[in-house]
Image (cartoon, rainbow, N blue to C red; front, side):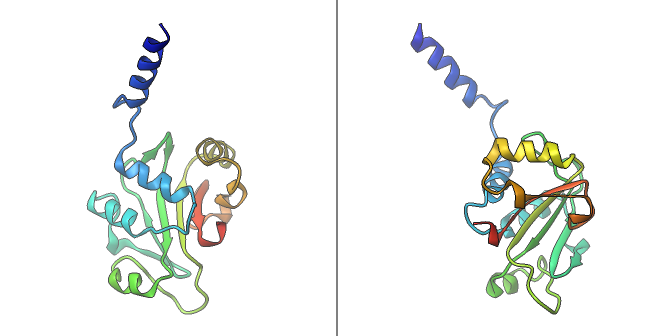
Length: 160
């Protein structure tokens, strides 16, 4: 009896309905902020999928920001924009079509997703995914977001 329940539980966890996509795993890995974010692959994946147009870069204080076209949902949260910054000059030079650099101080290594979700609900989602360690610095709302989204979830180099 116990073996049957265990096998059924493992089958549920492995079912395609519960499986994360490759892209969802990338997003969650980066937002976990176990190390400074490395946003280039995410931007390339979004561009290849036609969800962002690299020519539509909204350069903002050295951040490269893009509105996401279509529906991008990760673990129940709709993501509507992405802002990134890459500190490494070599990676910047290899990806000049992605990264915008303005004069002045660097914003630091950055990955941020805007969402129409209320900041309190986004904080609950973040806590469920990653625990309490970075929630205070990972969630912004309203005017504190980079593109004026309802709220935003991010990983920045200083959060480690």
